[in-house]
Length: 149
Image 1 (cartoon, helix red, strand yellow):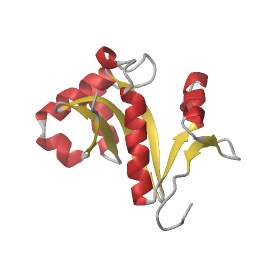
Image 2 (cartoon, helix red, strand yellow; image 1 turned 90 degrees about the vertical axis):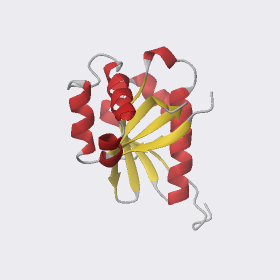
Image 3 (cartoon, helix red, strand yellow; image 1 turned 30 degrees about the vertical axis):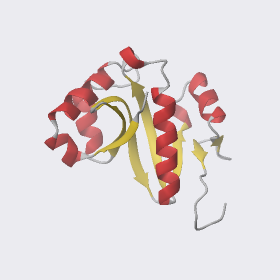
């Protein structure tokens, strides 16, 4: 499934009806207790301070993750994939595309550890994330062309 990365900020949300429909559906499919607001309210509240990276296939969003910029890092939260497309690698592909984008921009990726279930922590570790010394978040350090890492 050729999934591409698609950034959704307030401007895109306001301009594209299909994006509004897709993001609302994605978060309507979120596991119970993950999102504490109605899906549309969650998305609009998050867009007031951040953006979403979406997994796009055939002009439709199949999955998304909320992103906040934090200095040299993107803080990721609330990864969700539509129920109808789960178990097809959409979430993993989305995370890989975000990693590539972050590496190209010299950004680090962070996921707060307090919100994660054990299965999510194991998945992040398999993807190369490590728990920071303080235990506050998982981080992925990406090589950049400038640092030679």
